[in-house]
Amino acid sequence: QRAALATSMRGRVFALSLDMYGCRVVQKAIEVIEGELQASLLQELEGHVMKCVRDQNGNHVIQKCIEKAPGPTIQFIVDDFLGHVVPLATHPYGCRVIQRILENCKHSQVNMMLNEIVESTKDLVHDQYGNYVVQHVLEHGQPKDRSGVLERLRWQLVALSQHKFASNVVEKLLQFSAHHTRQVMLEEFTGEINGQAAILVMMRDAYGNYVIQKALDVCQGADRERLISCIKEHMVAVRRFVYGKHIIAHIEKLESGYKADGREGRNCRMPGPPGRDRGGFSPHRDRGMYNQGDRGRRDMGMPPPGMQGMHGQFFSPHVQ
Image 1: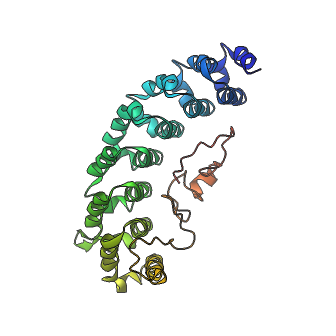
Image 2 (image 1 turned 120 degrees about the vertical axis):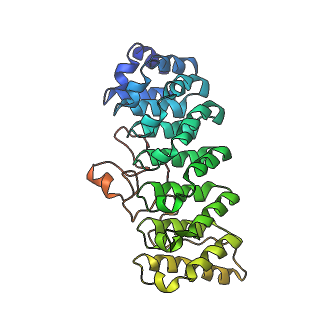
Image 3 (image 1 turned 90 degrees about the vertical axis):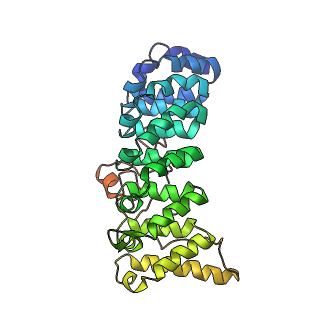
């Protein structure tokens, strides 16, 4: 029956992929058919990848190809992206496909794609779609990729932490980077900017305060103590901030965790304030159309991350 299904679709895979209902059939076929039959279906999409990626129906088919087909079979998809990664990363459908590639392909297969993304980090972090692609690089890339991102964002971290989209990237950088990278980031957070304590600038910002909370979560030992000490130096001012109570509550929970464990608690991780997502995204802030609880998604009638899309596909990044 599966062979009959594949045979019946021959010569029509591309056309069906652009159809609202036909794309569902193609996705199911890719999911249940394997080996040479599957490869023969995918071959019909060669030369049409960009058309599919930019199409509201076709992009789901390309995502399914990436998720279900072996690496060598989908190499033509990866190859078609090279040289076009940045414009596709800022496209509402293209960014989804790039995320699937980063999730499912070996590093050696996507190394050139990663280089394009890292080189354009400064532009992508400010984009409502591109910031998710950079987050995926931090989560699924190699240490050199994370170092490349930090290198391009260094000395701008405080300003980026106050940006609606870029602050998501700063949080992911804290979450997935090595200890020495976090130390570099803490240097900026505990330093000064324009004659003001950087920590104060961040704590009174609608987005920056979440970056500080993430730093409290992921930093350990002396790094966390250093951050808490820096915050306590400005506690009088913090209590006056709209978001200061969240920071204070976060510290109190961490410190109560230390006591509950009967030790210094340097490796203890406690949750943030109620409603704060433990992932990179925050349900209580309007951070971008892919964020859970984001007003922009609801206004546009689009489902939040992890929810099924129009073709029954889970197309959004974990991103959270």
